[in-house]
Image (cartoon, rainbow, N blue to C red; front, top):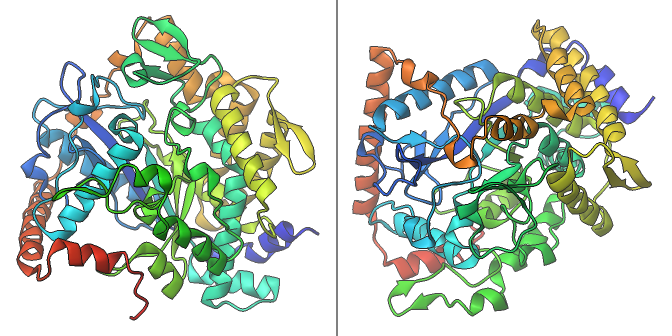
Amino acid sequence: MSSIELRMRGLQGNPALTQFKHGIEREALRITPSGSLAQTRHPSVFGSPLTHPSITTDFSEAQLEVITGVHQSVESCIQELTEIHTFIHHGLDEELLWPASMPCGISNEEGIPVARYGESNAARFKEIYRVGLGHRYGRVMQTISGIHYNFSVPDAIWDLLAKIDGTSSDQKARDDGYLRLIRNFRKHSWLLIYLFGASPAVCGSFLQNKEHNLHRLDASTRYLPFATSLRMGPLGYQSEAQSHHRVVYDSLPEFVNSMIPALVESHPVYAKIGIRDGDVYKQLTDALLQVEAELYSTIRAKRKTRPGERALVALRRRGIEYVEVRCLDTDPFDPLGITVGTAKFMDVFLLHSLLTPNEGESASQSARNLDNQAKTVHNGRDADLELVAPDGARRFADWAQEILEECVAIASLIEDVSGESDRQLIVEEQIEKVKDSELTPAARLQQLMVERKQPFASLGLDEDMMQMSLSHERQHDFNEVARQSERDREAIEASDEVPFESYLADYLSFREEE
């Protein structure tokens, strides 16, 4: 019996299979009724983006980031996401949320306002970081949006796995387990890009001064016939400089040690930009990464940070707490950008990644991961596509089918405990997508544009959120959270005691004391 079968048998019938924790983050551009990027400030009705727990901004002042709390139930997580979106839609006046991952209606870099957070040191830090991103990658790339799916494993599962594997259940064992999950996820993330990729086309305005091989669909739309997620390819969230730096995921100390040089050593490309021009900051630092969040990856190891604490220091001190999946396109067919079915499938896929044996990720395997991702991005819907496995070339459909059949068994494990009847059906729906690429979101979106002769720039928005309303009590709750966030921002600004230069130097120093 294989290791994954032993682990599955050991987990069978255990109620802990219903105790995974979930959270969802969605980025979305605010646009005008004519489809251009909004030039207005972050709406005051949403409170302070510096301190609001649920509604903030990403790169741009016009790029909302919606954040749910932590939920044990997928349904309750989606319910909170629905309520936040309902509150937002009724606070946008005439503006709308762009429904796709790839931006449109952007005429030039100067037309993309960088997010503002206030006058505190923390606010300046966040703004300068974004200014730096603009200098490094261009502001247009930073307006690409997506879905982030956060997932954590309950203590009881870790205890069971330790018993099954004959190991301890301490934090090191959990770190090792999360890193095994991450390695397997990186090895198989091409499958998620195929199943949920929804960016086979881009607006012509996005391609200004960019080299590409996209085909013309209409006067304003460019696409690739078999593409799945251009967001996850060279035209999307990618960094040429980062591609030459290998991050190691074999153990937490190795991960931390492989990250530190990228955060502290000057990089020649970014040194040319300069850190300051007189009193004006152009970036936080000239290292490969200004902060840990700049690392482009399909999945991240995460730990909640304390005030002023670096993400890497938090991981080194207290270990991995959860993972953040970052390769999901916004679903343009759903007003929330993600469905209950997608979220439930993610749980199954992530549990599969946790249970599957994986002894390490070599440099050659890391290169295969990137190669398979690129092939799926550009040609994922080509029936003849082959990927590269450790033992040689594999037909895409065969490999995908094999993984998904294992996921059916894992879905059954969860159903046996939860009483749900839809997990296996959700996985089987993904198998149907592998059998028929026309069922994928990318194909559906492309068909919509071709058959209806609808340019990417004129994608319609589902008005379901506008038809919904919050109860008086929930509306009051959201209004009070917004007001409290403004009070919190003011308190932070009043509590600053050191100049920004000292604040920045302290943050960049990697202090280890508790």
